[in-house]
Image (cartoon, rainbow over all chains, first blue to last red; front, side, top):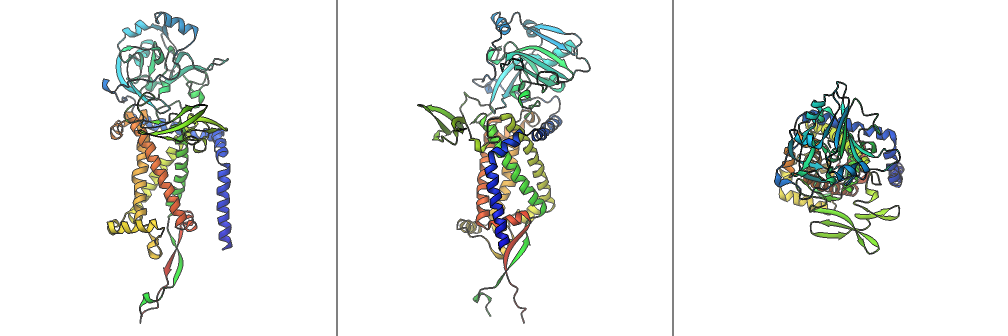
Length: 258
Length: 284
């Protein structure tokens, strides 16, 4: 009997201790670098298994005109305040050019008119924010694969990096500029487009005028807005925080398929 | 002599109740479901509104929402379910963070981490989702091949009779639990509840979770049709999680009411004590 009471006391005691440690204990675990490292293994597992299941060219679901959200929520920057962007906007982007460089055979600059003259793909897709909400919109633009074929990727190119005109987090060292990256599987996916139109009109400023990326099998933060420059690279480590994107440098997954 | 005329002598004996694979997967599941719940509430807090259909954001009608509204000098936390609104200040919608009222869906004590950090919540959620799925698959394989589901969880035809079920419900409501030989096995209510959790609720959590993944949508677009869209799946994920929380509350209450120490021992060491009648003298 005494053994039983001792055990019972032990159980009660340890339960109380655990709940007293409770929150602070959990938060300490969350901030522990080795724990963070271990948790990151799940991202690789998710990416490999999703890529295996999906197949490289399987399309994201496309919807009909009737399914479009009445209001498409604009997220992130809604008006880049840099002088360069403001000047381009004042001239309705007639002087804007998309610069394509890095590990490419023929570095190129494309005007908005040149991009609009290229064969376009139109798709009605769902945009999923990492926060949980979704909106459906219609996008038209040039398949990224067409542009990449035109400039010719060098064999060592592995990732395509998108540099944007919005400084989402003001900082002295310039680490707050928005950027994103995808690998070649997504870059050459038929639905990956450089969209210049949304719901039948020119892209509006809150949605990324004059050009934004659409990568339809990933979350909203991959859909970089206000594109200025596209860069082909062999690895992502030398760019900003080295994790391949603005939000990736702030703890979010590079593979945003879930 | 009539055996029932005098109270039968009983003897306490330990039986093997839970096999090692069942015990391991049970406790691993406790860990996984706890982390999945509190990291899930962290993720929910990033946008504490639920919708029905393919899309849903701020300007679309929500079916469940938690929000903070100004009320004079103070802030009020409101929870809306359909057309009903409840003042949930202090718990849902608005709760204290470092002594100050802050706008957040679920309070700091219910989320992992306690402060707002969606990226961290997602990392914990997806890591433990993998562990949960692997654990579930092992448990499923064991349950089928070791005939655990058939032997221990499948109710007999007799147990499913309305009269029998009615009797069990009445006994449970009075907190009277099976004794002696009857305590060797799960009763029908236990069997049905565990089957519901293992084969309906937990798979529904995984399926609705995967339906929120834009990548998995490309692999299995039919899931969007099954649940009526990504936002419906998100709502069903939340409702199913609520059902699982209710199950755990009742499950733990029953563990306490039907002999905490004996139940804990059986799920830790596998041994469960029952009282059986002492063997009768051999008949002449």
